Image (cartoon, rainbow, N blue to C red; front, side):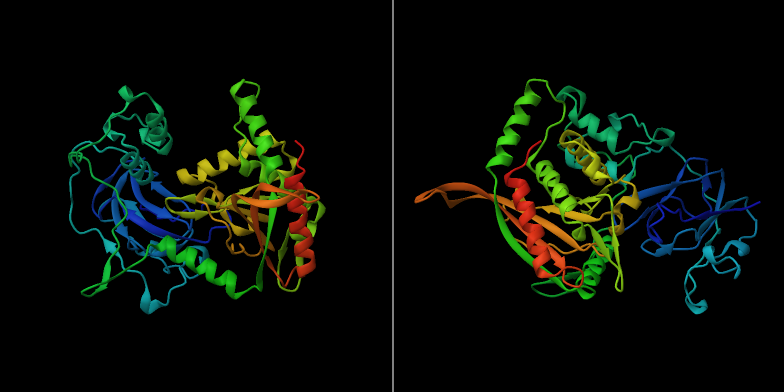
Length: 424
């Protein structure tokens, strides 16, 4: 009997996914474990494997379509078997498997037409791993995959890149085209002129753009700026670096880790900032679930670190590093990327030399802190005596519907106080 292939649900917060690339054509034989297609949430990419062997009888959607989770995407079975019962919308009673599409705009069906034989061995590698290998100069033919069915995944590329030069090959010339290349489709040129081109934008960018637009449309956002004396942070950073080099600790505690630790302490004193604004009510959290803005190749991701207030500084540093690494590798839990997963977010642009900016709130969160670079500025050290002191810029954007200006200012001042007097 034919078996439908559904769009998986990657986490409870994900309602739809974008179909990336088809790896099998209609009529092609499929083995258990073969990659059928790639798909994306708004922040991460995945691949769907065949759960059983057979022939790909039909494909119901095209690359780039946004598809509700648990919707039938394709059908695998024996040649000649009926696929009618599996077409999206075929069963009106099955609401989970029915896309919200009018009958006249039903998705195209690509049914079995010709029989094709698959020949030659195929290198199993995820699109993310392939892109990473190209940028890191790692030759994928030398890698041994540790993913499902021996597939090469991002972790394999990272490990190969960290090995001595003899263990990896720097690609100086284009690799032979013996292996099919899985790259994102180039942006389509929609319009062009003598001095310009209008290109399409990736689906991921569309989703991010929509989220940012909704944030500004549905909240009253203001930003307050303040500077904090960073001497204590730099002193602590120097202490932890010395302990790391001496082998006393295993975690490299960074300035950002220390800022996040200070923010958590401030949230404990000002719980009104550790909330979600829900229109006619507010959700107050007893724990701090800290969102961390991470810049990745796919765009900005904000995974949440649950129960961050329970962690020591070294534990917080370790967990934040793991979370950011998972986000950059594209294998972070989608539930942790939902804006509702975090209670407050920190976005640090200090490494880029940014002295001041206006971060945008991840609704329904009430506020977000922007951390800026450290700049020497004149400060009175004692009466009549001035000197240049390293000062860190802090930019707090808050929803004025949820917080008054006075509350936001006092909270920001507490973050400044925690940074200047941090004890860990």
